[in-house]
Image (cartoon, rainbow, N blue to C red):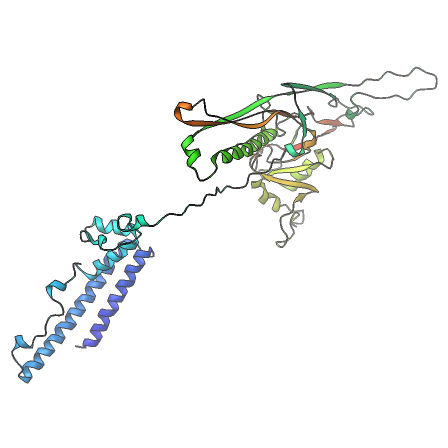
Length: 430
């Protein structure tokens, strides 16, 4: 028997077992392979035992042959005394315990299977376990609040903002909703002149007006905060709440300037009576949809596209009849900031792809915002005094609506309409 080869096999199995234990600890191999590693260790141990037995037999044979003492006398002393023997059932159990020091999940499974001696982990100070050193390691804290940047307001910076000193404001405007009849244009508000002969009676003309009503609507919200939290927080909680409330208020009213129903809240442009809603070609967005919006949009320098983020892929895919990409012809250039000459605002504040208003072209200078009270944050300690709490409250009073009540019909005889507010209808096809 080749003792050297047997010893090499034993060492190789032992090495493989240790490597497998390491992979189990690092999560590279599943815990179920623990038994496979144990078997490798057992096989290595058997080979080493066989090697030692053969070596012992050879030593004894040599001693007897040479006449040195008896068989008992020739037996080499044991490698270890009973006192020096390990408390571990096997070397695999020892490696498992070492692994458990680094992986709490493995340790829990080993303890469940009663594979660790009582009190074993108390022999090693370590930071992974609080009771044996972990409680001594401090946890760092960074007093900084992380948040995604808020969307900028879309409507208010571009709208016509009117301060209100009362809860209701009425303003006159030309009535440009009449049906045109050549040469009478709707833009003329009913006024039309006539050609006459010299020294004849001059014809009477008219001018049509209407009233625009802005009626204040209030929105508000409040939050109670423990005074202890205000005092002990490493972040200035009061400043954080005030800033967050105001930024949220700006986003909240902006959403309603776009989507509001007009009942107890502002009238949003998406569903306003003055908005032209074009029928869309399909569930997505194609060139015919873009050209249809442009056809109905009242020409002006203040137009801006307001488009949901999820429509970007559709616009990127716009092609002409020769299947050439129309918006971005290559993958080198960045995403354009304009579509058909008008700037684009990508936002989450309008409906998703395929819904009414997912894409629209608007001139917000035709949108009126009546400000009675800007978003205001107040705090009060009396209302929840017995709870040792401070109440923070935000309130604002505002209204908003397009000052046009309907699209403007153009000649001849109202063949089509234009508006400063144009979007796409919801897709209802199959």
